[in-house]
Length: 446
Image (cartoon, rainbow, N blue to C red; front, side):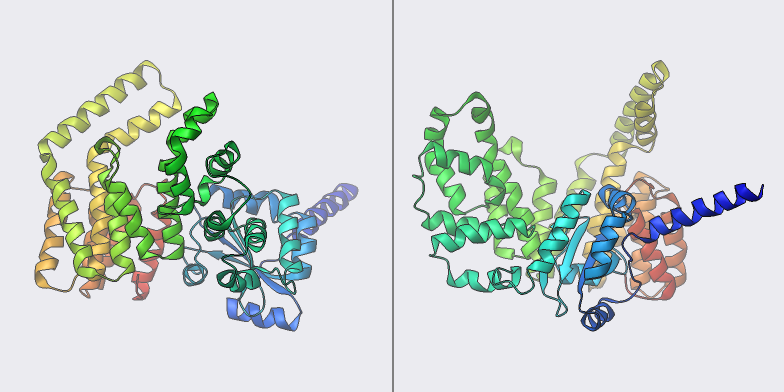
């Protein structure tokens, strides 16, 4: 028995030490991390995550605890782990974090050494640390390259190197690719080589870019020399460019690029236009230029269209029909995927989508609401929500937000608790709602 206990204790100590050898994430503020990094001659590494992010959990489980990773990161960095939707929200906005996990490497003055997004295997994650450290005193550091870029827009060699370095640093070289294409002398624009370049680098093109211009002007030529696969992919490039545009615009907080996206989106064939996407872009634009009046008008029109498109009775009837369809399929073959759809359809697929939209748009509307008439407008949306579904978390959540804004904290907390209790646990916004409830109870802004 004594030997067994010794072996068990040894195993536990080894397991603990193995875990301890991974990254040591410190529970301090970013400002404290900068101070400590200067004192210890290190840099700062931040893992931005969210609780709903699968790749974030995989990094935390499979990569961060590795001894090889801990050895490098603990030696060279003060390491922080921040929830981008909670305590790390302000820092995430400061460094324009829009995807998860975002792995951010900073020098002691807060300048970006390297930034990348997505799960990284051990070898690549270690390589990123090395690149960050080696770039500190390099003339080709991320900060130095970005400073030099505006002065080198006609330097073909520099721009080509800039694109390569941006990719190494985990950046989308959108500006670099656009500048290089305007001055490059390597390829004729109608050549097969340029066609290949366009197809392989389309993720770096936005609406109005030189890359899009080259594609438009040489599309027919490219199609004539295209392989079967290329002929299938070339017609899809314009959609990819459009999608890139809104992603880059949001990342750069660039209202003019959002406007370019909206204008281009409206030119699409009618059957390719999704009103939801257009509304989201318009709202993003008005937030960026701080035009509350236009923002509210778009929301009012959109919510009115949701409420008036189909009667409540027709929505409920269609949802019931869908539920019975899924129930019949589940009864015939009760597999897990059908069980999930059965549960979702029981809540009412159409009704739930409408209620979620009213909740999301209503929350944004409240940020700009400043009159009794606008308050009444939100109340009418809430009334409609309860008519569509008398007990639902989305309308409870919007009503709680109204109460809280009006200073009725007790009522707000009661409704928020009910909303959180009934909120779908698989929904990405669930953790946000939990956090908002905590903030409400503290009397803090949400």
